Image (cartoon, rainbow, N blue to C red):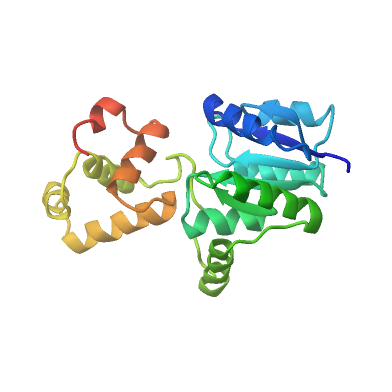
Length: 223
């Protein structure tokens, strides 16, 4: 049987090498490309093409959604499996909409990853119950927001509210600070969760640090 040629792109070296070492235990897989950034991946693809790309959707230079779109414009038949820590519907929906063949959470076990790769290679896709639910809700809502990988698309007021959330302030404290109603603060908080694909104040704080909106020192001690 001809091995399934794989590429992996992830900016976290430990995770990337862990996946590589795991997949090396299977003779049906051949890891031919290892990249730590999207530009590095694109350069490697110009030299040789894998059958499947395992792609993190959140990296420093550009996000996986735009990279997925770019790769499929250049190589329409390429099969891409998204790997992410994000489980919110908007991440799944928009990555699948961009053309990914599957979407896997990074806590997937070894057998699950093997099965997903083999299914994508054989059938062209691998749908989990989570993917199906996210796609259904996305189609039904018709307004599911595309997640933002950086803070550039947040409004000035949303950034202000985010800062106060990350400082551990309650809705009522933020309302008093900004001279707005608690309901308005709640609305801003929900918009932040929807836009960033996060689920709570802690994950919002992680988003703020990763995107450079706040430093770890500014957030530290509040969560």
